[in-house]
Image (tube, rainbow, N blue to C red):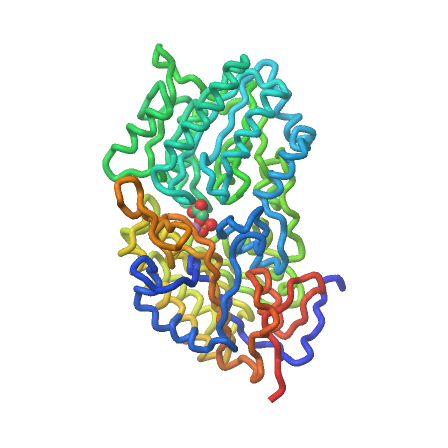
Length: 555
Ligand code: 3PG
Ligand code: CO
C-alpha cells in the first residue's frame, strides 16, 4: 500500500546497482602487532581509506548506538545487522531483559506463568550461555532469574550451562561456574533443590546457528534432555577444570558433560512435566534448540525421547516462525526495515553469505524475521560453510565464493541492491589465532576487491562497512590501552569483539558527483547506514529513520 511508498530523493537518481558490503568483525584501531587488519595485506580496504573524510569515515558500532544497555557493551552481529537493516536504534534484548527483571514484570507475563504451572510437580531447567559477555546472555540476569523463580515457587531447579570463551576470555568459564555454584548453594540453604545438571562448550554443544551442524545441538540434547554425555562428574567446577586439560580444547569447545549423583545417575534429565527456559536473549544460536524443544514434527536428529514440557524462551527468537511460542520478555519490535521498504518500492535485492553468517544479512537485517518479503524481487544465496572445524584452519573461509556469487549477481543486471557479509575477520578472530586472523583479513580484502570490480564494470555504487570490531584487536588491554598481563606475566588473547568504531566507505562510478559524507554527524553509527544506501538508491527515508550520512553538494 501507500504507507510503503518512499519519496524520490531530490538529487540522487534511481536505477544504480548498489553493493552493500559488510565485513564482519572489522573495526578500526591503531596499528600494532595485535591488530590483524593492520598487519595483513589489505590493499583494497587501505585504498578506500584514502578517500577520507569525504568518502571514508568511522561510525559507532557498540553500546547505545546499537541499543545495548551501556557504553561498555561491545558490538555484535545481531545488534549490528539489526541497526544496519532497520535504520533505527531499538532497545535490544539485553536491555529489555534488564528492564523486565528490574521491574519484576518478567514474572507477570504469560511466558513465566506458563512455565510456573510446572513448579508444583516438576523441575525448572535453565539452559543457556554462562558468561557476562552480554552478547547472547548475561550471568547477572541468570542470577536474578534463579532468585525470582525460587521466590515464585520453583522447588527444583537444574541449570544446563554452556561455557563461553568467545565473548569473554578463554578460561573465564571456571569463575562463572563458581559464581553460579555459590548462588545455587544459597538456594539450597533456602530449601530449593537447585543444581547444575550438565554443561559443554558453546561451539561444540547446543549453540550452532543457521543449521550449520545439527550434531552440535544433538550433543546438547543428549546431555540436557536424556542426561547422557561422554563425561560424568559430580561437581561442575571440577568438570570444567578437568575437561579444559584435554588436548585441543578451550571454553568454546569443551566436551559435553553431565553431573551425576553417588550412584552415577544424571541429576537433571528433562522429564515429562518439567519446565524449560532457554535464557539467551539473542536468537541465532538458540533457534535450533528451540525447534528441537518445541516442534512435534522434527527430523534433524533422533531426539530418542521427547519430554512433555512447558517451554519458554527468554525472548521470542523468530518473529516470523513465532518461535518459541512462549517467552518471558517480548523481543524488540523491529518493523519497517530498509529491506522491506526497498522491496516494496520495487528494488530488486540480492543477499549472500556463507552459512555461519547467512542469517546476519537476511534474518537479522530484516529485523529477526526469516523468509522473503517478495520472492519475485529477492534472492538470498547461502554458500555452505565448512562444519566441524575451527576456522583458523581455513581462514579464507568462503570469502571468494561469496564474492563470486555476488559478482555474478551484479553482472547479471537482475538486482538493484546486492548485500553481503564477509565473515573472515570475525569468525577467525574468535579463534584467537592471530596468524590465521591475518590470513583471514587478507582473504576478506580480496573478496571486497572482486565485488568492487564488478561494481566498476556496471557503473554502480558501493558502500563498504562492518558490523563491529574484532580482528583489529586480538589482545586484552588495561585501562591505559596496553596489553594486560595475567598473573604469570603473559598477554591474554582476546577472542571477543571490541568497542572500536568501524569504517564506512562510499564510491563507485555510479556515485553522483557532489556526494560526500556530512560533517555534522560526528557520532553517527550503524543505524545511519540504512538511510545512506536508501539515498543512493534514489530514495528519501522515512522520517523516523536515523539521518543519512551523506549530503549532495552542488559543484
Ligand atoms: C557468536 O555468536 O559467534 C559470538 O558470540 C558473537 O559473534 P557475532 O556477533 O559476530 O555473530
Ligand atoms: Co563475532
